[in-house]
Amino acid sequence: MVSKLLQYHIISCKYYDNEKELKIIENLCNGFVDKTILEVGCGIGRLSSLITQKGGIYTGLDSNKEFITYCKKKYKGLKFIKSSSDKLPFENEQFDVLLYPWVLPDVKNILPTLREGYRVLKKSGIVICVDGTFIGEYGILIKEFFKKTRMHREFYFKILRDSLISVFRNIQSFDLVKVPYVFPNLKLAAKEIIMELKYLEKLKLTKADEERIKEKLEKFKLDDKVVINETVAFHKCVKL
Ligand SMILES: C[S@@+](CC[C@H](N)C(=O)[O-])C[C@H]1O[C@@H](n2cnc3c(N)ncnc32)[C@H](O)[C@@H]1O
Image (tube, rainbow, N blue to C red; front, side, top):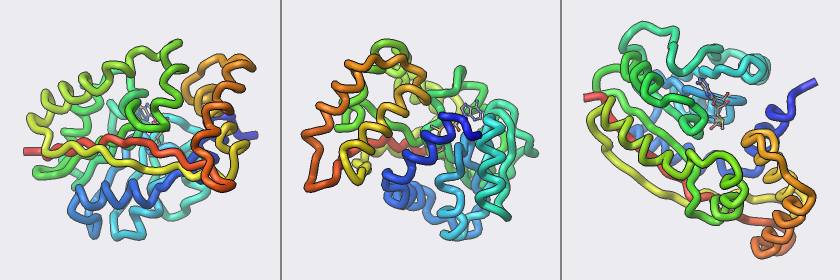
């Protein structure tokens, strides 16, 4: 039996434009070929095989044992390690690239995590943080539900930027890019969003909340499909 959280992750990355997001990351890294790449908080390995196909030498790390077991089974031959972002089981200066995709809002204290990242990154190595925002269509759609609990997300970006500057002493670039979710129909779109709020954000949704989500989705219908843009933030730093 797999957990609801794992089920949610498997479903959500089916509908998201993973390739578009990864192309942006690849460009920010000036390519992946022959680079050692550590993804901290690799989840179910959504980006792992794509990075490998583009020539990267990939390692995925996550604190969730079930996710790491899933990754090892699904992506045989790739390297996955169960550990916490603030205790990386690597020597100093091992990696050319450090990726934190959709991870840092879940990390309780960002600074120890970034200091560990700094330690294992080679000199001139690149760090990329990828995060959802509340300014695009998808973010606006779910924002009202977040307000019930995770208020820290309201000031997450300030904490992130302050922490990056404190550890890396630079932010080389900041980009906001629209990346679409394309759902086959309204029912599956609603299912994915409700799963995200219940199992990832651990919110208690009422039946009325669920109905409101379905109503809100009507305006994103495009023929049979439902297309919603997520506005994604990309921060890039370099180890000086
Ligand atoms: C939203 S998922 C993103 C997964 C993946 N990076 C992606 O983009 O598909 C966040 C992941 O971060 C992991 N995570 C959260 N806190 C962590 C920590 N302190 N150390 C390692 N992994 C962590 C979670 O277990 C989860 O798999």
